[in-house]
Image (cartoon, rainbow, N blue to C red; front, side, top):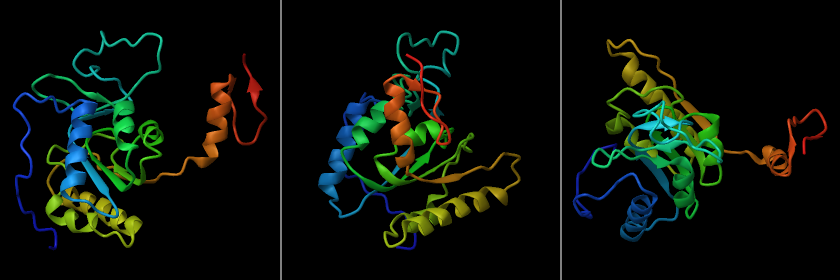
Length: 212
């Protein structure tokens, strides 16, 4: 009530569980769905993030090579295994549901690359395209807005305002950037399909140029 945080242990997972795998994410979401079924859903993911950079890049930037496949993105960091989960794997898990919003409390997740990858799993994405300060979201004031299902857009705009104001009054020199993305990539679908067929370098105002 009014953003009050109540701590309650619902499920305990085995010691050593790797939190940065698609299997663990799928299990946690399944457990949450069974424990708290609802007509609408919102999801907050909190951890580290590397946005459009592949997993392992931060720890070994000169050794992270992904041959013969598209550059991937990563989210999350397990301090026991030092692993991260690729954004494509996050999408594979989340697309089994549909969320009113996806709030990403992690660095570098507000990029167009991440938004496009997650375009089919939610209506709105709340995230920062830059680094996030280590305290993360001020949940004590944002929580109540997460449960406002009558007007998700208004609630998410208010969450972004709360985030900005919370850090703006602190004596911290930092870049405060937060974006709210309405997930609608419908006009890009035709270009994506043509690109897969070799028709690249397309824009809405000029014909497709076949590059096969």
